[in-house]
Length: 253
Image (tube, rainbow, N blue to C red; front, side):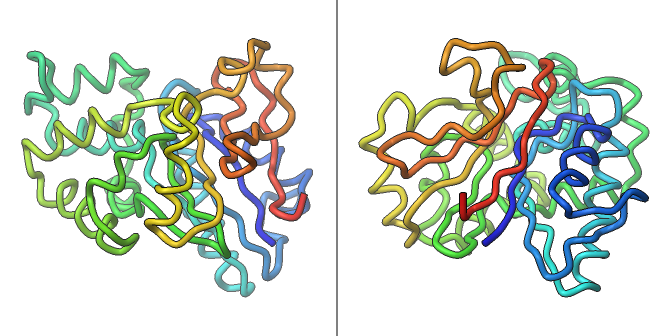
């Protein structure tokens, strides 16, 4: 069993509230989950009031959980990537004449977040694009593009990390575009099983696309994940930055 949370987007107070209600942290915000595993699917930054505090909280909980025999795992979100690129190469052209700085601001970056410490930028840049927990493949974007970066999870992570951390200019532009794609498995659910079989998984966990936009409701109506594509896909994006309350998903639900 594991717990999972979708896109936080700088709402550290919401993250702490959700984890407290799930029994994963105590009233002081310290890890209380023992040997439990918590998975976060990326987009820790942008659009909300406390991106820096959100990243600091997750980094701290990773250390505290590890000391208690638990785990806090995370994948790289498109907004996380955009902030890394805005910090590292702000004047490089991302495409269509935009720089990475102007692109990041356009998708919700706040100038105050440029004060993010280098250690946090490095942590974001080193997040894996994919991870496997039990029989569940975890990614950020609901898109099959990941398969174009390798035949295994390890290859995908290695190739994407190289692009990000060696500042492959052409590769960064392409990755930024592709990790921003949405609804691949929602629009074409037949793509789900081949994608999962490629990486040896039974189901897929992701965020990226707010659930309310897919089901025609308001963010406040969303209290649980959207499970679709023959029960193979689990969408965790509760639209927190749009006023959603968010939720913690328990894998044995």
